Structures are given as C-alpha cells and as structure tokens.
Image 1: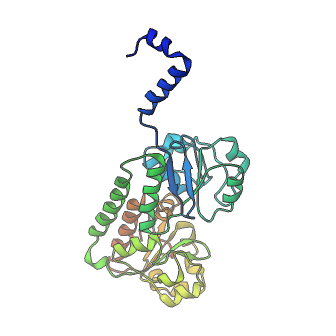
Image 2 (image 1 turned 90 degrees about the vertical axis):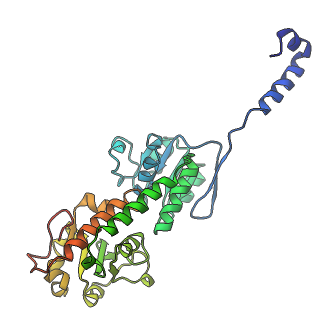
Length: 312
C-alpha cells in the first residue's frame, strides 16, 4: 500500500486522481433493467428494497422468490402467505389509494396491465412495472422478469416446481377421469375460465375437455344459456355460487347438477384456483381431486351443491 509521505507528495489533485483510478478497479453494481408487459423498459440503480404490489399473484411470486420482506404495501385482496398479514393495504388494483402508495416511498410498484393507476403513478415519479400472467408461459415469463428485477438468480426453480406439481397432479388421475367435459366459473356473471387461460391450460394437462373454447378469450362473460347448451359433465364453482346453481334458468337439467358432479370450493380454495402464481400446483391438485371424484359412479344430486372442500 502506498505510504502517507508519497500521498502527501502527490498533492490533493494527484491523490484524488489516484483514488479514482483505484475505485475504477472495483466492479460497479450493474443497473437493473427489465421490460414489462406494456413493452416499457424500467431501469433502477439497484434491486428494489421497497415494493408495493397491487396484484395478489405478484405479491405471492415476490414472496416465493424470497423477497417477502421487501413488500411494504399490498392490495386489499392479498392474503397469502401469512407473513404479509401485517403489511399495509393500499386499496385494490382498480382503485388503489395513490396517496397511501406515495407515502410508502416505494422503489417500484407492481401492478396488472389493466390497472388505471399506471399513468398517474408514473406522473408522480414512481417506477411502475405492469405484469399480468394469463397463461402458463406468461406465469413462467413473469417469474423470470421478477427474478431479474429482484436479482434472484434461480428464479426458474419456482416455475420448475409449479410445472412438476401440475404434472404430478395429472399423473395421479385414473383413466376414467380423463376426457370429462368441464365448465369452471371464476366469478359471478358468469365469467368462465376458457381454454386460453392458465386455468384452462391446467385443465387440459389434467386431461379435461373445456366447454369454453379459446376463441371466446381467457375469461369470457357468458350467457348462462351457453352453459345449458354445453351441458358439461363436471362443474367447478365457488361454494357461494353453488348454493343457487340449480335456481339458474335451465341449470337444474344439467347432467352435472343432476348427477351431483358439482365441485364447490370455499373462499381460500377459490383464491388458490384463480391466481396465476406459485400455488398453481396446489390448484392442479384441487382440480384433479374434483375430476377423480367425478369419475366415480354417478349418483343422484343431494341439491345442487357439493360438499365443501371442492369435492362433488
């Protein structure tokens, strides 16, 4: 190391020049750059330490990538994992509390591409990353994008675990469960999970035949008569909707209702089923359990609803 006397002879200008030369030898921390689903490049000087997430599936993904402690704000619907119970709520994805978000001083805000708050947040100087997984490839891509944003080098492992879990659920099904014609309702309307959605792709991997074609979009709003005409073998629906299923015009005649092949899922299970993220393998197991039970010998329905727990 250079001695004090030699540094003194260099003078301040020389010493500063030497310091700059020495620092140049240190590896500089690379700027973080990602491109979101709107095609916008987002740049940060370093990985974000304070994150606000306005989409439950993105919150869950951040936690699965080992960065749960960086979430300083989440939307009102985020309820998993339990570690996020004490994190401040900042409204919903469609109606976020902008003032509350700004007050949290986030390095980045994660939200859906459909959020109306994107431009307002950007106008306030916040970094915004818009991501919205709708298919299996989308989920994989979003996980890798978040991995790059958060500097998680093994982000691909999360997708591999999901993919393996879905495959295991498919392999667990008896041959009789394959080929069943399925209708899955994701919310009142009714809004269905079509073939083009991540849910539809999971059902396809389980060997089910979705009565809602890809041409209608991932989550189309259907005329209830469409389902009557389709007459599915199995219906997957929330327990709340299942209670009045037979009261819908014409639905009492559906073979799934008549034969008791209606899988009713409670609120926690419904969350698992409709969120495209780390718990998709668990969702596949819930669907597989439903299909396996539906493949059992038919029996008269005891009302339109099935037992809680997603079991027909």
